[in-house]
Length: 358
Image (cartoon, rainbow, N blue to C red; front, top):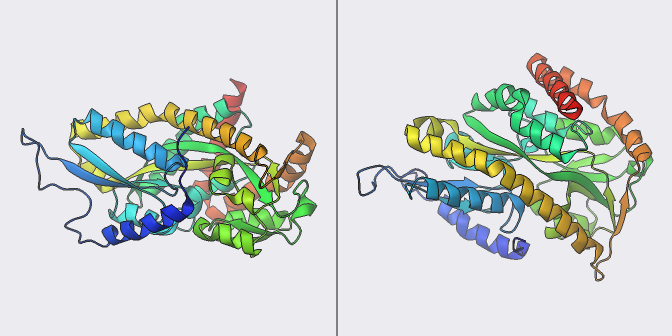
């Protein structure tokens, strides 16, 4: 089990990391001024994440960086940054675009205003209920790894891998068992018109908010609930300020391992190959991490007597009631995003159905 870290500690560290981020361009990113003993260039890189040490994205990035350093015999070394160390989720996406960082784990929900096609990951009840099917689709989908990836590359961001952080669940200050329970419910969301529209279809009052503000907003009652994988709900202590959790599995939380496209394309062939090998070897590692974290931390929530949380698992009939309202959002996506996005979604649906059939 990966060690958890207090959010307060993360906040203190973020100040120091932000000061590092304000250094000159000469000090940041790739260092081509040094060379290994045989004259080969060495690289000192930055890897931004949207989570804290002990949480999934950070631990993935740390293992990725250690593996890459080993594969390159130390020619590539990477500093991993927690959430907040280099700005908000939106700031980090801008940094990976402009080369302020070389690597970043990006949640597509925070890129919807820039790469609108990426909003497809916000479509509820799109992916399979089978973890193995989703693993196969995320790793092998042409719609994602070629068609959608090209949209990000147009913005100088190259997706290296799409991977799941686990099923999305709801927490709230009241029970959430049927769509009517969302009437007037102030639901925290990411910045995505599609996510907003999806919760409006349930009758909710969606409220975009960075997760850095979420704990206090839940505690103060500024928002009524939120959605996240189980590991994140427990590790961020949201269950302490929410009385109810609904196991809904209405979506999976997809993260992207990304690299600045200019940097990647300019790497020597052998180092670029090492990056590619690391990406491939991390695919099953990410899956194992998320399965273990989500299982262990669900148990932690269940056994927390100090801050008890009522946990309810939706029946298939109850999920179908939400699914009925969610599926029309696919047509909204097609109309809102346009022809290219519609084609990507349609191909992805075919790939999911084919994977489920196999």
